[in-house]
Amino acid sequence: MKALILAAGLGERMRPLTNTTPKPLLRAGGKPLIAWQLEKLADIGVDEVVINTSWLAEQFPEALGDGSRWGLQLHYSCEGATPLETGGGMWHAMPLLGDASDSNEPFIAVNGDIWSDHDFARLPKAFDGDAHLVLVDNPAHNARGDFALRDDGLVESDGTHRWTFAGIGVYRPSLFVGWREIIGEVQGADETPPRFKLAPLLRAAMKRGRVTGELHPDRWTDVGTPQRLALLNAELADGIP
Image (cartoon, helix red, strand yellow):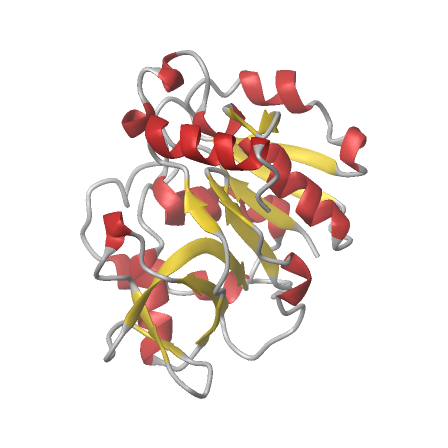
């Protein structure tokens, strides 16, 4: 199984730290945030990882090299000066991950600016549907949550209680079939390469009963601000977990 780490964001909420360093390369617990993801992926047998980049893109191969220190083969999907958003970034990286025309093999995708003790070995290697999402308790900055999780494991847009999407998931290329019709007339979708969000594709797949999920009840942090990064770094320095 291959994996994608989404690392192309501008890191605007993390200024001034990201003026000179892309957010996934900021350090917590003695190593870059993205290194935690690479280690976890290597531990479950992933051997190829694609990293999409934009802001300060040249720093990623300088810091991470070819991935051999983790036993991985790294590929870089550079999006240019303007990030392609989650959907466009994943679509742009698809030739390195698989193509719906000849393969529908699932791949893992993880946000490069999160930290979690979620065991990636729990992620399904095979499943019915187009996506499988990890959900977590709602943090203060996302109190309303994102998606609902049904008792049968299906994920829906709305429900009695909505959880927060953890930025950890497994996807099939088939999620992108007909993406232009689903996205509609949004700014950036007609550019080359196209720029669009992933959420509309997920919500469309949810309506078809094609998205499953799991709840991770333990530690997870969206490392989106300098304050959250400092808190995570202090906790890791104290040996938590």
